[in-house]
Amino acid sequence: MSSSQRGSLAWLALVSLTSFVWLAPLTGCKGGTSDAGPTDAGPDVTAIAHATCDAYIACMQKISPTTAADLTKEFGPNGGCFGQGRDEVCGSNCAAESVSALCDRDGAAPPGEGGIVPTEGGGGGDASGARVTLSGKLVDLSTKKAIGGATVQALGQGTTQANGTFAVDFSPGVPFRFQATTSGYWARSGQQLSAPIGVDLGTVDLVSDSTGSLLTQALPGYSATGGIVAVEIVARSSCASEAGATIAVSGGGAAKIIYTNSGFPDAATTSAQAGSLPHAFVYNATAGADLTVSVAHPTCTPAAFPVTVTETGGTITYVSAIATTAAGKSLSTLRVFLK
Image 1 (cartoon, rainbow, N blue to C red):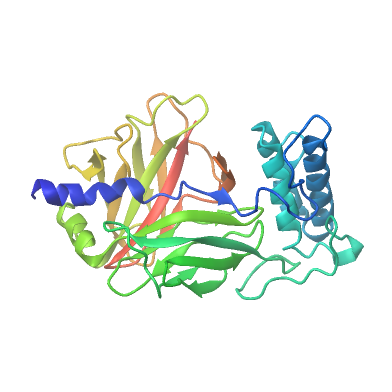
Image 2 (image 1 turned 135 degrees about the vertical axis):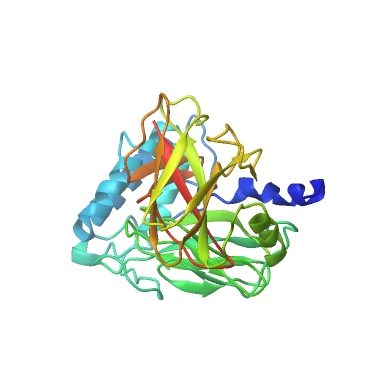
């Protein structure tokens, strides 16, 4: 394979869902923070943010206690959001999402609001019927051109606009899988996720048929009747590095594993290399099967699922290490964690 072909597979570093940012304007939200910047004589931004989030959690407690518990971990007084010192952002998120939920149920209205109507579309959801939004932009991995007319799905389903943007709904705290499909590209899906409020996936890359063909050429003994999963190993807490980790699979039939070197599949590499994303591919997995991936490390401990991760812009929960594979032109993505 030529160096240019190897370069085309630099996309391997881009297949994981790592760029979640929370859907809320940073200023001027109803019930949130003031449009004016903080001054010595201005409002106490921290106090306002905490009050807004406390009110949101309180009204969600009457609708969905499970969701309220998740929200408390992120937006409670000792939650992850406030722990990062982003008080104004935390308050704005709580204000924006409270008006998307049925917080008027049982007489509990969100701050400054009442008579809230849930958004339409999508199936599933919690008992309240509350909906929040999953958004992003779909682009070609190699050219970065926007992909319009693609079908995207969480719990709700939608179509990308001409500029590649999409917005589909899901229910707070209810697991979903993000999926994207369109002609000329490999279908993309991920493991189950959940979130207490709406999320923006940022830029989501799809692999063109030609780039996918390059990948299959790098997989020894590849069969188009099986599925492919790109696996990323994330070192957290006291685990200094993912280097040296190995994975195992169950439920995948005759699935094969190949690790990567500088993001490129390399049969001579026998364990995860630091920074080589994804760290491994599982391929020839039984199509339609629920494939479970486990991880081992010489010094670190596998983190048990569900795993909640605070990204730069907020928190997302990875529900399980299970990927559902499809035959042919399809790529699943999955993260496992070390601690």
